[in-house]
Image 1 (cartoon, rainbow, N blue to C red):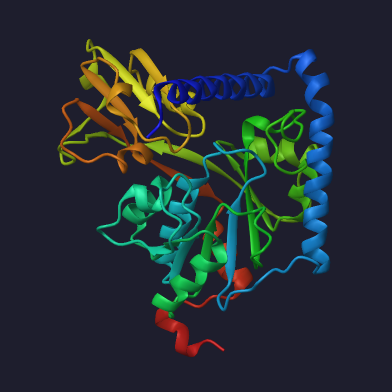
Image 2 (cartoon, rainbow, N blue to C red):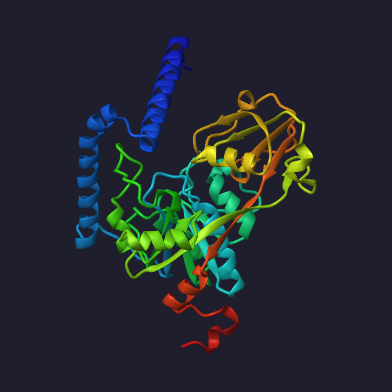
Length: 367
């Protein structure tokens, strides 16, 4: 058991780390000269390490394993919050409509266990992480989480040997697993921005890494964003597309069959809480829909919402990602804002054609 003074030190250090993280993230959006001078050398060290690591995998000094099934990585070069998970759900559903048997592998960030787990209807978010569980509920696709994506893939293929394709939710920098295709999700709002690597900027790898990917999706983008990326030299000859997020009616967490529109909350004391990569986007979406928020609470990505975190309000809005971590009924009047992604052009068609995947109902006729 921790002594009171030790617990106080841990709490103080946690607050300090949270403050520093917030300071650096604000620096990424609005660069501060003093921080740039301090962090630029560290970013160069990080860049050298990242380049060396990738080179070691490429020449075979670090081993990279291949699974018995094609692997498509859906990843990013940013630090979180690029809108990737909704794209994975949309892509899986599009592949399923094409009769492609697809599974998902993940490390399950934010979970309390390191065990290899294949998700089922009784699995909890604490066991596998919020994003994998949400993807399972949205797609019903076979999903496995493990400490490594290779272990997750092997376990999933053992349980579902008829799978034709595995999607790795994140893992672009996980070079220990060979991949057949790489699709990078890049925020359209960041096209043309001068961004540096960690810790001086939000990038895990240099912008030049985009040229090595098989495809790029500009999240929250459009055809104009793609054209601008082409002009700036971000694109080469790879597949490219853009995505948009669509919001549907709210549903009550305690009674999911009960739905509502934004106008139904007019005149009420509304608040929102989110434990996602970029919570400000969720708050902005609510305000764009016409919700007047009296209070917003932003928690760290994947954080568990504790009883002390809930705001005092007539209505509290949360994301689907946070909803999977909560067990109804709750005493608060909690409403969930579902979202889905639209990808243009059809990414599923590109993947099926590139990997020569046959629909299961015509598999016997394929050579």
